[in-house]
Amino acid sequence: MPDLPLTGGCLCAGVRYEVTEPPLFASYCHCTRCQRRTGCGAAASARIVPGSLRVVSGDELIKVFEPPDGFGKAFCSGCGSALWSVDPGSGQPAGVRLGTFDSDPGVRPSFHTYTAYAAAWEPIVDDLPQYPEARPAG
Image (tube, rainbow, N blue to C red; front, side, top):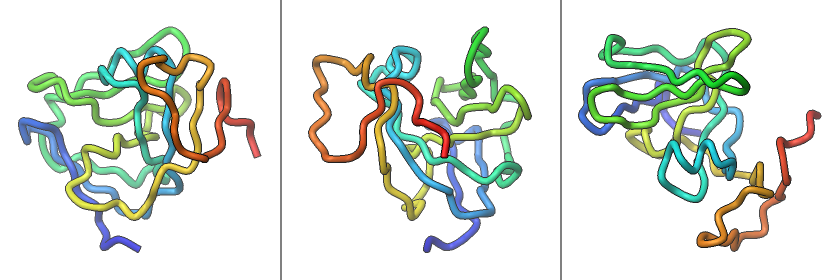
């Protein structure tokens, strides 16, 4: 169990945040949107308790790309760092990018989603469950 609050931020340190509850779970997303947003084969994110993220500084730097379908993508307008996804229903942060935490968030990815779109140049080499699209509810 990590010490709370968890802290994190962007590359330029303009955006700083705290997460006051332990993350619920973590996963890898292989959708093409995440590939283009990160420049990587997959995005590693921790799902957080709604309302548990508080921006400590740099709120004015946070911009959100809002696609016509799916979750918004929050990023720092100063350095471009991907920060978290935004739930379209609540407008709250939902999945914090694992690389933005200052220390170990105490959770490890436990499955892969959207593997039907996985990059051929980055094969999935672990034994975690894989879902061709979204993980089924439940």
